[in-house]
Image (tube, rainbow, N blue to C red; front, side, top):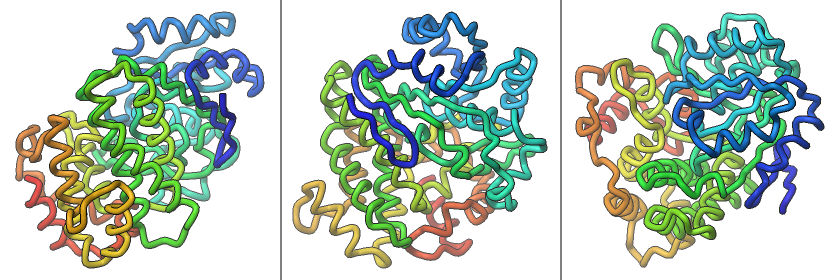
Length: 375
């Protein structure tokens, strides 16, 4: 069992979720709101976790949409307040964890939500009053359990980032046991999400050697173990390493991401179609790597060498081939996105907080070109 203190407290290993009663006591949580999704709420895994804290009479909010929305957040906050809750436990992938961060924020800060968005000057409006939050990831992808941000789609359709060190969960409980039954398609999509985090962070122009080292190690783990986890869901070593790679992606993206996320964020906010964030990242990543290569050739070569590519083999080609082996889609049109939303997507990408840390500066025409490549 490993206790890691880096950005926040992390309990990492098989069986670490059994520490939940101890952790609620240590944080003084006497009536938790458990935020999850409808699928997990029906699972034996969730029943087991709830049984650990049955004496606290937890309230469960399980209506988290695949991409968290302001409407769902308002419902969850209402449940929190009406039941006298004093802390939040997030169980699931990035969506329940992000929604739980929103609950921890709005349960202790006056609305409206939009004023806390990073691009609207919200960073300094989020204070230490945020309710205590325990995050228990059940996928190995987002790294949200140690991230300082949450992505939430507002009523007006904007998918915005809410970022503050106060939004980092007080404790992240990373138990690879909870991922052993993750379906292959979700294993692939979330694994590519983790890999994308590590790659984009390493390529970010900000100076942060510790983050670079973590990102490089995470990329090596993900490229080594993702296909094994995809093919053999019960492979414990593969699941352990993929959860670590996901955690590393979350620890390191404090340095900033890039155009892959600038593009996937507005896609995730589209109405009328439900798009998985990790799938979008995987689909977009090769085109962005090719675009960025002139600005970060040396860094790309470091990654290529670290993950064992042959001399002259490009990372973008490796990712394209990996996506194919994992059965992930190649184009946006194949997953229901029409070109009629191109202008909306470009506008969203231009205004996204990740654009500022892309290694190659982007103009509107660049985003048009990149979206056209992946349609």
